[in-house]
Length: 180
Length: 180
DNA sequence: CAGTACGTTCAGTTTTTACTGTACAAAGTT
DNA sequence: AACTTTGTACAGTAAAAACTGAACGTACTG
Image 1 (cartoon, chains in turn brown, blue, green, orange):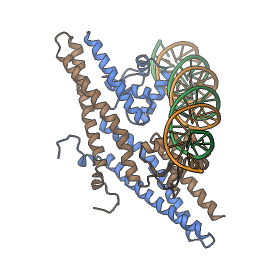
Image 2 (cartoon, chains in turn green, blue, brown, purple; image 1 turned 180 degrees about the horizontal axis):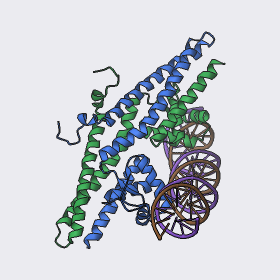
Image 3 (cartoon, protein in one colour; image 1 turned 135 degrees about the horizontal axis):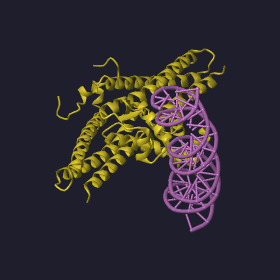
Image 4 (cartoon, chains in turn orange, brown, red, cyan; image 1 turned 60 degrees about the vertical axis):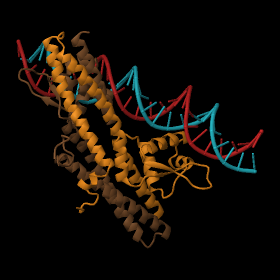
């Protein structure tokens, strides 16, 4: 078998695996394949080259690359003499992991903490209110307990993400198995 | 304002927030709302009760509850004297977090490790082959380096998940802020 | 300053996913 | 054994998401 062809086939398969994996994280196959392709390409690519390589529209390449740069999985690079935008894959997957979950989780965490905090306050007022009848007040108490548990979980998650961003997580789970 | 109604409104809002958050993790709004509802319900529910409460079809309740039990976010409970299946929400969100990512990530990790390992072997054979021309061989070498880096990342992720499942992660990031 | 090259916006289309109602199988009741 | 009750499979429909091509704005080029 031709060596070049074999190399190509291996790449294809690995890219497909990467795409399928990213799919698990809520990224579409196309975008996953784009990332995989950029990962194995050893030079930055233009939108037209991506379009050519994947057989998709330039519009799709534009929006997909936008998604990937938002997730910091791809970055725009500058090169003298060309007017086209050039993009290359972030190669450090530890970094990719950290950025991905920091970006995704932080948004949700703060949203949830805000909602829970506000709701706890409202229910505490209700639980103490003279007007509300007994049944409602005990129900409110129960909900408050649940929301406080949720709040404590979100604070923990926040600290977990902190340890990702500060890379302190690698003190606990070292990158190399034997380290520490 | 009526206390019961106010309680209801607060719950609705929190459930909506929970659903929106789960959405971030690739769970649909409906399923998220179902989980949120079960979380605040203080007793196990039947499919018919869920259907009633959410105004959706029983079929949907059945499949949604299946998704949630697969993720260990909901469990079936047994109660004497009823023929209907009863379900209740897992209330410990730390546990939910651990199960969710263990289940989701493990599958991807082993799939990827297998694919990478196989591909590395194939490319190493190619890189050493006399028949392949220089260009292909150096390209293979580069790909091998990248795949080995990927492999090392997946092994790290595996160890991270280990620390979730063994709950050793809580030694590093304690549940309560002040602990340790 | 006209002309060209480039990336993105937007409206329309295709594909995928979520949801429903009917039909059915399994288990319980009389 | 006939009749209920319950959960789920399946096929069809409705809703959502991905994708495309044409049109546009911006910035570079001669």
